Length: 110
Image 1: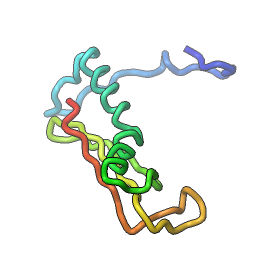
Image 2 (image 1 turned 180 degrees about the vertical axis):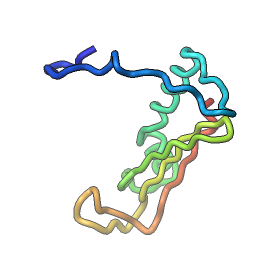
Image 3 (image 1 turned 120 degrees about the vertical axis):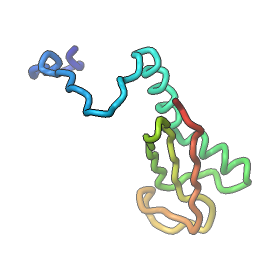
Image 4 (image 1 turned 135 degrees about the vertical axis):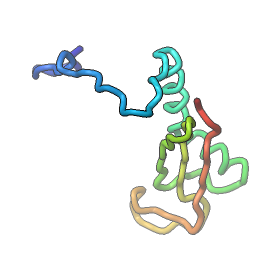
């Protein structure tokens, strides 16, 4: 499948599945994996963070939000970090910070 306005070669036919390293379990069934991907994608959003700041009467802003996908021990979680509250320092959105950091962790998404 070629993206719109793409004239170069596609490498889909060159992709191959590598064997699993020794000791690894088989991958998830495609239907389960698709559900997991959808749950992870839904968690990579500022909406849960905005709900948390509004619930706690903080300024309605998340500065420099970061999303970290944590995978291990049969679990997948999304960690959200962002500067919240006041006073805000910095002159651009990419450099704004506050003395407070919001940290949200999803439940196990598997």
